[in-house]
Image (cartoon, rainbow, N blue to C red; front, side, top):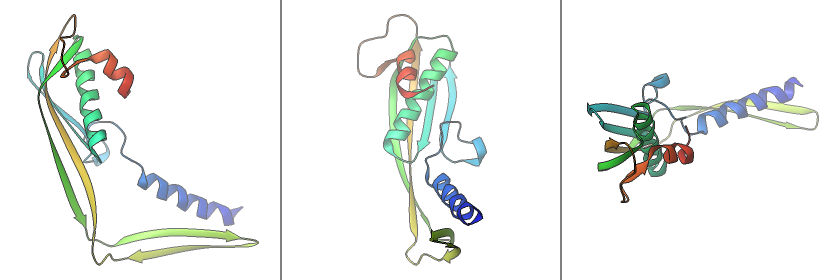
Length: 156
């Protein structure tokens, strides 16, 4: 059983590192991914979400805008401005890998260290919205959103 436990643990650790960050504030757990928001005036906010790709950043910003809208007692919000930045960072530091295998009655566990010669890169995308909140019937138009519908469709 121990021969299987070590490789299985290594595989689980590797899978945890490869998953996307969960939804939450940018400072949660020291992560540079997540949302930030700033109240500009009553019913008006600036919202930003940093994610690994365009879809994650866009969905995260809309979800946070909907959460703020509902928390403030409003029904809908209209995006009055939006922009997006893409950043690519090169990681040239060493990395450590753990691997294991089993076969028949024997197994093995290995640890390796690599120094990438060309470097690796990590992409992040930040989506920024400025929103104005409202009550009652949602205005027509592609930039107006029903907060309850956004939360139902994007989580939360």
